[in-house]
Image (cartoon, rainbow, N blue to C red; front, side, top):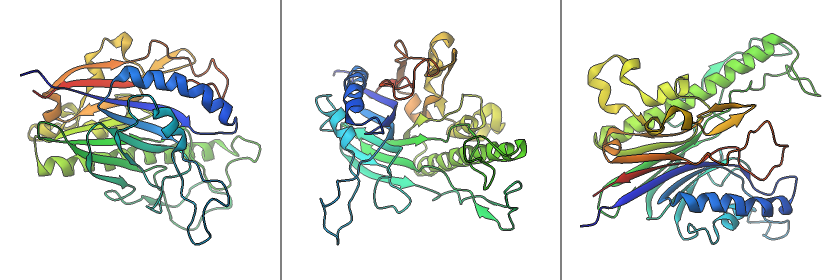
Length: 334
């Protein structure tokens, strides 16, 4: 019997949509991104930063609101080998439609049997009173995640379920604090910036916790479940969000909980190849594939397609390339 292979990939497409530069800029991007997708040869593909487009005014009736469509993504997938894949898309906070920007998408060669867009289902929004707001804050405010998580489940051809969690954590940049940002840019005070940076850290770690609890749900149903957490974490392997997600034995220091640890698959690569972004000459691994023990037992190898990666600080805004390299992992399910 021939050995069955499975390839799962993640790729941040970097604001895929018709931005201020217009359709012409998108047309320049599509061939570059399509070639990268084709090289992945993925069976399951996790995408981040997929923008949605609104139909033009007058294209729908007053009684039926205009729904957003992933037109740019459909153009990208045409003639890519992924056009016929089943898919799931994250939803905005209304739970009814994709957001205008930064949607998550999971594409699968096989039909998805269940999917959900999670936004504070497992972790309530933290509440706090701003310390540096101008004018001073007197009320406790919820601090919500910037984007949802996306979870999808599918049945592989040989029977077992595969669970995919796609995520895109907030960048490590200070979040807004009321009254602390100047109209022309910059901050009113270092204290305001520091609180904004604290809020960003809270959002990233909190959403990593929600993903970790989602993994716990899946492993509670089946300790050998095939689970893969993928996406742009905007954090390195040793930073708080990744440590929360992994649940590494060295951090937890509780041997009987080791069965829930997630393995960072890029660790199988040499250190000098282990990066997915370049910024001002600094290489970092911000995009990750983390596998449950059940899935890790089938792991063969990981690839990071960073050979043609451009330094984000060296190219002007609006450049057609993505400043993230895609990752792909291959498994045997014989």
